[in-house]
Image (tube, rainbow, N blue to C red; front, side, top):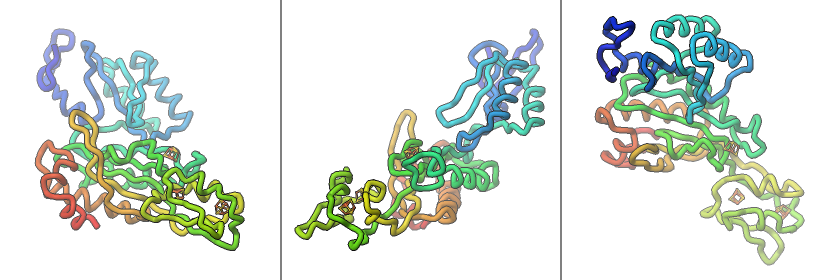
Length: 300
Ligand code: SF4
Ligand code: SF4
Ligand code: SF4
């Protein structure tokens, strides 16, 4: 039996192999004897068909021929023998496919398709996610953290990639504004707004209750005369979310951030986490211990 850390037996010859260190580098021991998984780095879950072909070939050549798509949009090649790990890794990297990493660090950023693909998209979640991944993954400020640090970007308020379950998560949002002269009083927006934010007044014009508005943009997309227009767009940011044994939803930190402001929020959150987090605790636990208002003071 192979312990999490310790001696790995191969051909009855002991080899001192630190399985935890291998795992940190994306090479993960499977339950089955002698077999490993290689976790690949696929930020925002985007990969070309050519890359997938190359991964498929490596899987057939060195693994079991099976791939697994992780819940965080990663790809894992299963069933690789220890003696083939380095060769498989080298061949992947020669093909431009990067191996992922685990452990207490800034993890690969996930994102939904966003406005470039999804009809509901309000923000370019793929571009924002890739940019954040490029900026923080593997960089000094994202390494040696108290625990893992997950980030995702959703393109709209439907929040498909679950920003509130990440250490820091974003979703696109839009604030509508009425151009009264273009409104014909049809009332479609009143019916469309699921939040009850819009009510038609006695003059046949829609009145918006800002306290109820969640900035989904449904009124804009449903108006037949384009009388609702975009006043501003941006990203809402949540912090302190996590799943696992003790789930907790992240709290709203800021709204209508630009991509640059989102990046600054991550940078400051990582600095806060490094300086205030205890080993083994997620950002949300640190925030609960120190106080959400104090966290906001640090990051805004
Ligand atoms: S979060 Fe919005 S933009 Fe992203 S996939 Fe879901 S519906 Fe589409
Ligand atoms: S849907 Fe457009 S045209 Fe109809 S009431 Fe609303 S704003 Fe006016
Ligand atoms: S943006 Fe969404 S919540 Fe706000 S008024 Fe329009 S439909 Fe209602």
